[in-house]
Length: 218
Image (tube, rainbow, N blue to C red; front, side, top):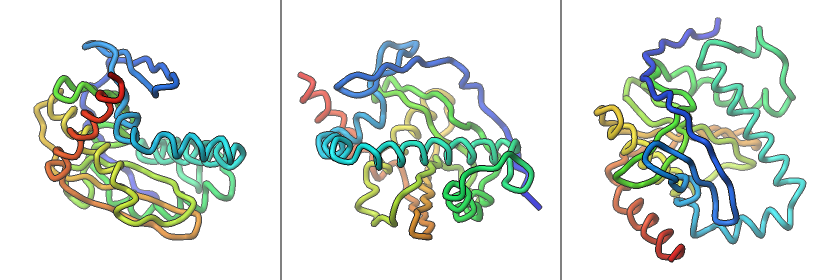
């Protein structure tokens, strides 16, 4: 039997329009046009990934499509709108990745936000957070990742900065502090990984990433 998730959604309904250029993505927010969280925390590796996409166009497209479909199904599952048993069928790879990560998804409950817009005056960043909810009973920023292969904790460092930025923005907008993040990753080599941490431990590194981005922007 599929789990039924409880929702206590916070009103974060203001829309954000996105614009992508050679320098990354920006969002139009009520406090101005702000760079995206993912652009800033991934700034130092942008040239490496741009080169990889040029050299591997088909794999790049495949990975992007895989991520979009997987995220969509996870969001609908947490919204009690879809399960593999009762919903429309998906491709075999997406189904495999979803079933691998499903036991971790079932540890989520009391959901405050799904794919919600966030921005911050403290960081002057904006983005859309995958999920804010209790994970194993702890209020957390939760991010879902699909991967070709398992990753080390060091390889996921930018994800931790991303979660930290969302924790800062959520507290700023709602007054609710978030002391935990959980990165849930499912990979094509059959491995599911969970990386947890405390946003406050990564605040300094996030600031350094922001400063680096603006220094390069002049």
